[in-house]
Amino acid sequence: MILNLTGNPNYQTPDVTLADAIAAIDDYEQSCFASATGGPITTVTMHNKAKVLERLFVILAAYVQRIADGDEAMILSSGFSTTRQPVFQQKPVLAITDGPNAGSIILTAKAVEFAVAYIWQYVKDGIPENEADWLVAGYSTSAHFEMTGLSDFTKYYFRCAAISTQGTTDFCVPVSKVIG
Image (tube, rainbow, N blue to C red; front, side, top):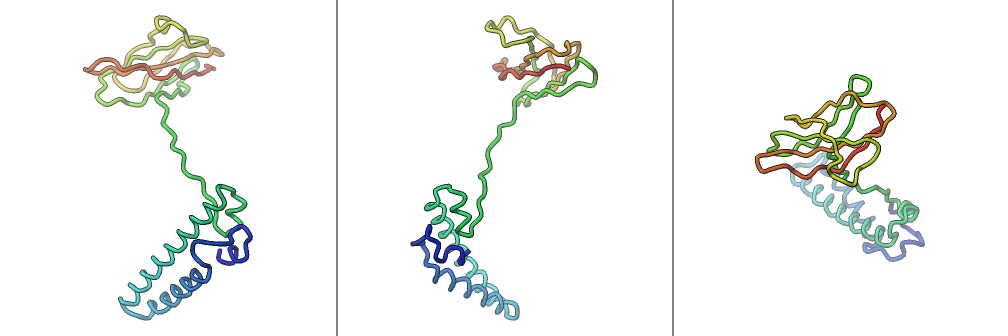
């Protein structure tokens, strides 16, 4: 990495001089050799030098990130690698899987704390404008429900709500599936 930064036109004024980084690397390597044959004090010294080196590389990485401003090619030219930040993916509230028989599906909802029952609803071909057009498929005491008798090659929309001693929750966002 130091070699990649040396003379790199993208990184003219690093926040840590490359000479200081090279000196820290050399210092750490010497402490590693010393700790191999030394006692606890040389091991502690090695760990302290590792922390110093790590801090310098964190500063260099921040500098590269700041100058590159997300340009992956520019980051790679520094000798650092790029990583993607993890993206939080919210678990869907309602999942649909094929059932054991033709025309059947299994609905699995995200369990709601203190729910004593769930109400399952469906419609064919499109989400209705009127709430009263949703059909009740049934009720269950668990967050799973199997529906049968559905028509092949038909698009259905499904939703569910939890029922607790406090009342009924709002229905989840409808999820669609073409049967067949």
